[in-house]
Length: 126
Image 1 (cartoon, rainbow, N blue to C red):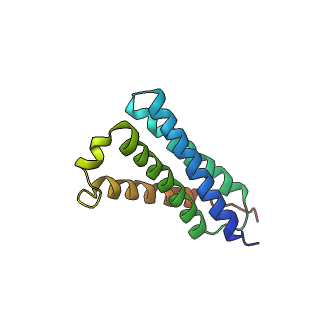
Image 2 (cartoon, one colour):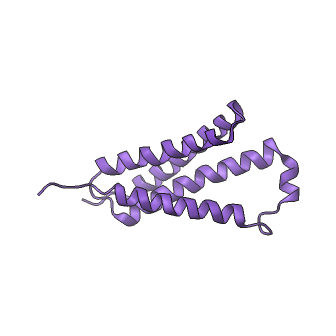
Image 3 (cartoon, one colour):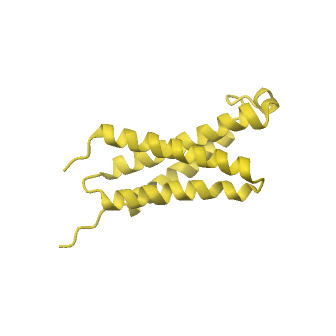
């Protein structure tokens, strides 16, 4: 049974927006930098649980949904930081001149998405 693409797109968008909101909320509540990893962990674990319970989701679909959700949350956090927390940072650090933070988040997102996609495979007993 194949999962409809629209359902996966909705899952990626919704989970990414919720995780982005949680990251922004975490940044507003606390100034401890490590606390921002908690919403990312919640995002990855919730997708992992969803994939374990959903039959018919391929590795490619699990990887794509997780990566899109991760990057959506990250982009929301970046927009919040650049527009609300430190507006001068936007003028001092143009994204096209300093791609390292984006590259690091894409790398972290890709590795964690691959791990979720591998661990999220539904095992069917024989």
